[in-house]
Image (cartoon, rainbow, N blue to C red):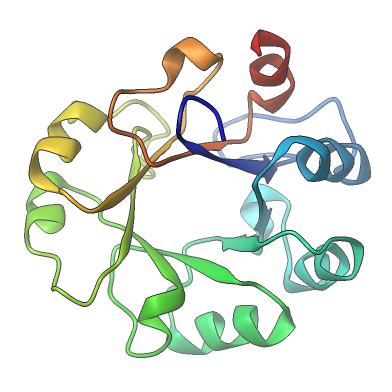
Length: 182
């Protein structure tokens, strides 16, 4: 925990927005396993992930694992749980299965406002997944709407970037620098 926020350390080797890590998956996993309260493993190949890497991570740690990806179908959610994820990020929709194990990432504040009562954990991503740029809607805006558990994600470079009211922070691209800031 950092300033009362759970640290979800992400193993991220690339992104479709031009990021490419200088470290290997194994090096990033070792770092995430050392410092994270939870480890985030990508299942989406656009971010250098796969379900095979999720299984590899599960075999290497006892820490909780978040399967990170869009997870556009319930079958992908089921597969992530079956392979060993404790939690699954689902972007832009509410799955019909395992909602209690899902971190839901609404794409807009309007979608956040309309989330049903069964949703327990929410992620507010400052990155616009269509462009890779920043959203105009902020974590503070999201916190005003969502009173429950809320994770801050993307563009977290140092400990000073953690927003007031974050129950968790998901740090990926800047994990090495973030750790140095501690």
